[in-house]
Length: 305
Image (cartoon, rainbow, N blue to C red; front, side, top):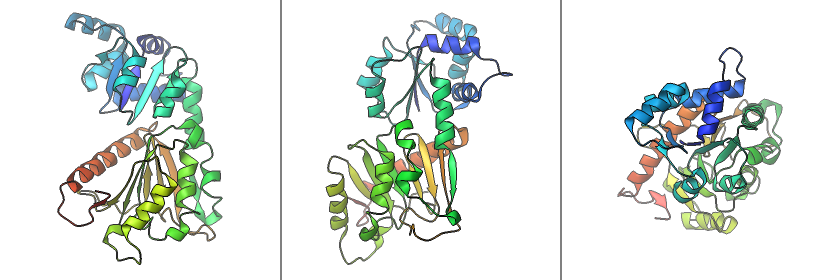
């Protein structure tokens, strides 16, 4: 995770935070600052000496917590300039004291932006509308109806779907694959990675035709289809990963929506520590797998290569 935070936000958060009366949103931010692992932090203040660093630690326990669990925050002159010039925006949270006129542009890039004025309400909305379960024995209303709020609340720039059978039946793309992607992403340049078992199968049409169908639908997106036997990770479960959340669909994303099922769909975001760690662990293993595929001698390790 990348965490951009204004010192004014951090200081005000520290002064206001009271464990005994903190809101659920305040507790979530406190947990991110104190407990989340592998966080690269950027702050808009000068840190030019160890003495200055020690002073900043002494006056704000959250600043100290950030330093204690990882390397010290990187001082930047401008959060805006550093973000737009340097950030890969793979998983980025931005906290500032006031709303910024560049927040919309940052969210189009894939970041989640909060001001001190709105962070509690916004995180509360995310928890309320983007953490839920669907019992498929009660039927299914379709991806666009089910995920109608997630697109506005959770920006993204990458979609990774792990589902061995997702691309097996192109005749169902219009009822499942396409509506699913449309429901969560309005960014036409969103990268789309499909981890499937299709590269091992003998189909009546070749992988190039399947790729061309997807590329025709998403002409401005980077698209890759990859072998889903991820190294050191049994990748049986059907999961969709974005920058900030996971969707579990045990029955598979290309299921028959007209039939009820004993399965369920679960959506959770990184504002739950368990999901943050799960997403972090899975994506690291899948990225390592893809890097290995680049040098893999197997035929059809990924497409296009």
